[in-house]
Length: 490
Image (tube, rainbow, N blue to C red):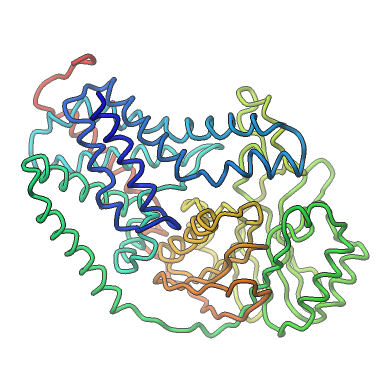
């Protein structure tokens, strides 16, 4: 039993070390090996518990940057709950993240030893992992952060499968490699040189493909306007003072498309106000995208507003709202958690792109929407490049900032689009359709970077997460063709 627990812990530690901002993404090709040893000859009940523990520990370790937000940031800013309550909420989050992996453990315990053909074993295991990971991302409390694929944001050669498979294809590939490494080492523990040789081959293939990727600069200049205003300042200063800061820092930016972060004015709808008039006077004939809430009768939206040549031309209202903070999911279950609310509970908007002169149809997403491939995929079909406007001032952790930023790299490659991300503090930058990215230098208020409008639709654009359906079919096939019946308490 001790060996099992140690193997589970080792898997969780290795996977955490592979995530963006930690040590080295290549560890992801070894992270599941101890988990498979822990699952060896275990039945479905024990297998389910093992896999729940694996992903719970990984979530607890990897997302530790949420703890200061829940125990200090939100309580100090909004004062609705205690630090101890914040710890409870974090543990609940980790439990919710881990629940889908009970499915992985149960079916692995039922059928992994009964697969009729050896060649189908890694396909079955990888399919099962994909299903569990996909289920983790659906629904109002779904989240996709911490996917195996996240570790490979900087492996640009391997990322080139994303236009065909999305990140679930990469999850599938990583799981297959881990399982085969496990089988090699299970046969003989001294086979590690073979494992390392195969890993070296993967790195070589990645490097060869990456060396052939184009590295071009786009033709359309955009201004990334990072305000660098801490949360405790932004949420406590009046709009008048925030506007004076904008006038001081950004009035001299060139006459290009200027992109500001989410919630520059966090608590006030400035439309038809003196603040809006002064904003337009400051930026004259320039085109700006700027975040502030939209209040319409009983509905409040988390919005990006677009102005061009002194006129209001439209807005984007956030579609995928952050559970508990921006909206209350499943009220009958979580009704007592409304104390987590920020300034408002928002109403979900409608996905759309905005036509901007000289730039074409620009897609816009807000904050953690970039974590959801399905949300971005639909938007990409009607957009020529995409803007991510975010409020990352909650995080003091570079790990958190990096794990958010890399999501736009995956979305850029999946959808063959340039992506621009602008944050109030943290990491702002740009990614091209091949995963090449540039970052705004630290403590920079604004910088000009370049994009190219693109209309091409990828296979993933058209067909979405079909890998989930293929995986489901493979698991069902494996169950129906198993060598013999397995019993629940074998």
